Image (cartoon, helix red, strand yellow):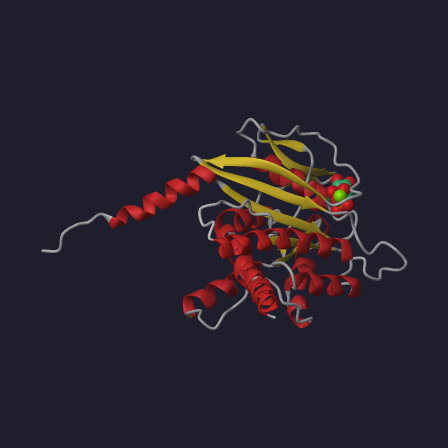
Length: 297
Ligand code: GDP
Ligand code: MG
């Protein structure tokens, strides 16, 4: 009979190593001023830190954003630590002359990726295999779409295209509480496909039918129609993130009201690893071949 050697313990060895060092996930938010980017950061962290000691103050004011800066917290579930880093950006495209208004953001993403890529390549070339490198790459860009325009502005299309060259772009419909159900559906119907913007997720030739179908499901969810809030409202005696109107309350975490929970699940539960891997495959491979070519010359 075949004897048992025990190499199946490799999975727990890997798990132990990964648990020890934790995970890092970097997201950047891009869009016009006033669409709720800073508010969403506050909402994501509040919704996730409710039971941990890092909890945010409910009424911490959201200030006008004037520079690109990361907001970072470690969140932890069942012994798994995740450093979630969300990069806030000032709005772009508010000027009369919007030429190259995306430049600072694209530069920021490129610099983050480049730091990481260079560190990886150095590690590869010098065989420092055990050295752990903190992941500075931007794994995902949430692109905020204005809910009132009924279509994308030309500047948004240009910026989204520029971004999609350097990062996984996932569009969201901002402030979707201002849309009727019909308007929301209209938005979801193919505006983005029409403009031929290369958005996450990407199909590859190696994909089997299941994987292709899975990507289709994600595409049908995007863009996520979201609502953010920096305040708690009391619903059924419990404080939840919400927005109170004259006619009622929007509960940010209620799936019947908006898709914030879908977005959060997508980012932090179902697609965390895939967004990280895609960043590595697509963007690192391109960088690597260029650098290695340069070395040969
Ligand atoms: P930013 O410029 O994109 O960072 O936008 P802010 O987060 O500063 O938000 C601008 C204003 O929009 C604030 O008054 C927010 O309270 C409000 N706001 C943010 N998110 C939403 C939302 O989902 N729905 C509505 N109706 N208002 C929002
Ligand atoms: Mg802001």
